[in-house]
Image (tube, rainbow, N blue to C red):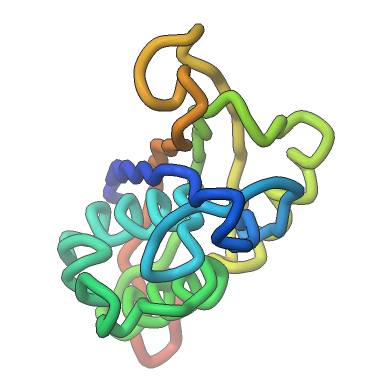
Length: 165
């Protein structure tokens, strides 16, 4: 088995942008997150963790960067499913994952289980999620944005059967 870690951070979009807030594959109340995709930092950090664990680069390697990239306009859940398919085709599959959201908002607590289910369904294994603040420090503490750190465990599989080897 192999472990990988990922990180992502984005600023909140202006209220005038009218962009929806997506986090952990769920739509939340409040102003959205800037980004070429839906800006879902939890999903993006998890993608980086999965790819890192499999030794397959990072989100930019798989989807590209910028408004014309393969990830532009996509939702986190779709990007996670694409990532898992990419891993499976290369003989790896997710076993377990964890995501930490670092932000003042949105408040994760009352939607934690729903977010864990959405992330787990997207990658096909259990994902746990926690949240924290930075006690007023930095861009997340001042309310300018949101960040996430993720860890993922993957194991080798036979690509033809997708069974552990």
